[in-house]
Image (cartoon, rainbow, N blue to C red):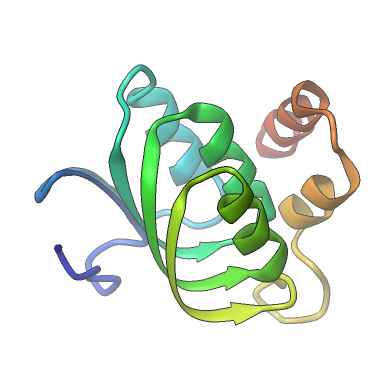
Length: 130
């Protein structure tokens, strides 16, 4: 198993031991782009610095990712991934994912916590990123 190198990227996708995608971007955009680019694939391994509930839901709905390695996951994300059969290795589990300045729960997490319908959730996340 390849060890994440978060000094080189914030997000990476692996197919087996082969690195097939990496990004240095922040927020949900790198994950969104990666899942779009590799839709139709399955069983990929994701290295992502932070996994909140919004990211967890995008991952599960995509069907692309089988396993996640992360520095930090939110408790709602951990539970959602467990309930949907996606393996998670998180070095730390936090109550929620906060904004960079730690003053509030991040917008993606707020949307994910307050929107149960998958279609409405995806529409709100897409709108947030535009």
